Image (cartoon, rainbow, N blue to C red; front, side, top):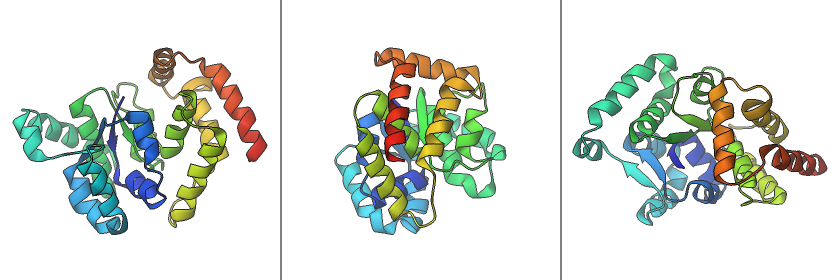
Amino acid sequence: MKASLDTNVIIHLYKANQQHILFSLFGKNIFVYEFLVNQELKTHGQDIMQKFMDDVADGKITIITDDYLKECGIYFLFKSYYQEDRPLYNTGDTGEVYAIALARTLGAMSIVTDDTKIGGPHATLMRLPSSDVIPFSFCEVLFLLFLENKVTINEILSTYNAVIEKSNDFFVSLKSEFEKFVKRFSLSPYSEREKQWMSDYCKSISVDFTKEIKTLKKELKKIL
């Protein structure tokens, strides 16, 4: 699975030293458009910039530039996706729109963003039945890792607490995020596409979604 990253999730995870969850789920198939690095990250994430660039140098994250897109002959496709999606989002969501356009351009992609407000990229993409981009928040990345048996309940709680503690302007309830995750992919999906994606995903990792979610729910009740 490939991922295009939004600036906010980069800042949240790197400030808490929890960026490893991205590599656990996506491996080295992680991409960031250069605008997010050169404009947004340099402005809002100066304290984590060096750690981020060290991971780029190590090949864990790939920065996609306009020159690269032009060399591949897909720059105009990327720009057309950006122009197509731009009217759907607020004026302050430029980075998110670029992240979505990059995901669409590179194909078979997800976007990881903590912008889950109504009208934001996460909420909007969930509600677009024809969208070919699946959005995940950092909490959803943790739940997916649990399905893959790559994290324990205590590791989920540890990462969640670390991110919330280091994010002065960001808070989500782990219990609420889990309930929304189950609703989204099983009980009451916004579109059949979401439910089908999870079904295909669980088949690919040989996991019974219902069984694992019951286990996770039981474990969460013990600690929340």
